[in-house]
Image (cartoon, rainbow, N blue to C red; front, side, top):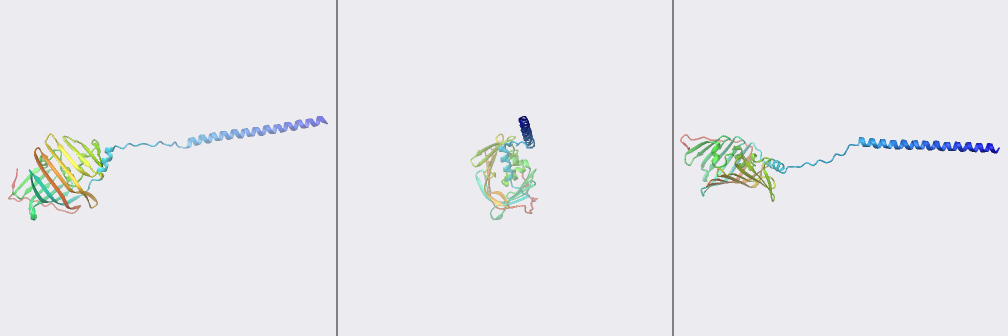
Length: 282
């Protein structure tokens, strides 16, 4: 009886231990599977998650940035019409006149000069390759290639430069990445060389040109153009006063323009005829 009871107890103990072992084994398998699943999940997350790219630092060339800002401030037009009170000083003698200017962009600059009471003094037409001048005081006319202007400014000066200066634009040939850049208070100074011509542009805080200086030391020539009193016309910012000083060796010519009427992109004509009685000035 006791032996049977002992056998039953031993069998019950074995079954109970076997259940524990089986439960323990199941738990271990679950634990192993859980760990493996977590590793696979972590591995999958690591594979599926894109790497965070490091921010790219772009270095901006300050000269290029200033040039872009200057170009953005250029005045673009098809035609330009202006009337100005002007003072012309040569060899110490000053004359006050009225000047009418008409520009057909990249093609022609037409200028009419009148004295007191509207008496016509001179008429001038400048194209990219020629210059025509009528002097009504002396009944003569002058016909020359554009290079005649080089007598008063550097040989590098061309038609488009002159056109730019009359509307307060920066000379396009002076806007290049090789320029030297210097900050002076709120102004920006760009300087460089165009062949033998040394130049300097002074730009205001708004990147509009306030001064253009050209100097050909070898030829003894210099030209300084100063822009002031900016005004808004047809959504275009333009100086209402332009001063020009030309030095050719020991000869000085000064011209100051005070624009009092400006129009852009108006239909206009460019009347010019030479009286057959006038003599050609050589």
